[in-house]
Image 1 (tube, rainbow, N blue to C red):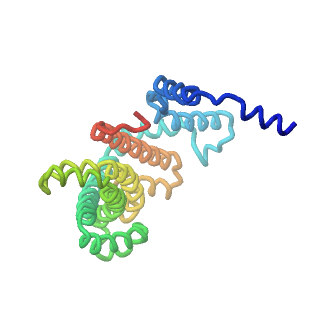
Image 2 (cartoon, helix red, strand yellow):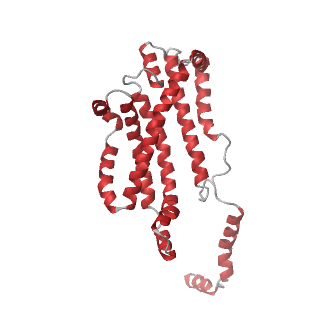
Image 3 (cartoon, rainbow, N blue to C red):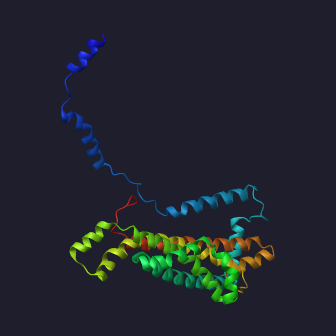
Length: 290
């Protein structure tokens, strides 16, 4: 039986090469008809998660599962926010916080981007800059507050410096990584075309570093608001953080929730603005999300 089976297997006609490749060709044609992607963009998709949390919070409050002394109902928090707006207190605190965060963000972005360019485009620059930046990266920014208070006092300089130090690290890390990850084929092409160094920086280096820069910027705006929460509780007389700390002393949980909601909205709005400019600036890229 084994010999007969072996002989039948040998005698079986060999399939045509076109038959062997037909499934692959069909699969390839199917791939051209259906593009692998994440699907269509969901309108206001970023709001679905927060809206779901709000629904759960409201349901728990209505059902009595959440103690109002621990977490007031959403409508109570909204009422408190309306009262703060009517008295003008919320606007004043918000403007002070936004100005502090903006100053720290601008200084941190500029310093981080410049250091990343120097370190990313020069071996000597990397030897000088990368080590101290990595040391700062290992030290939490908030742990530096006592030292910054000794250096700059307890005024606005300390607060803005703390935010800037928190911001520059993600800007530097991500931009430097993008600079060093640029495909060497572009460098060879630039050499072949004999373009100048300035044009090479403008046409190859800077566009190649933009993806990392925007990724770092998304982290940076988050770190800016996180740092602001802490520094505004250090000898501050205004700001959202000061409002939260004062409400904590008086046990006003609803005002604390209002302040936290303001921080959350500011963070979402900042990230949305960065994503908007990221999509416009990197429209030349084709990615899975497109």
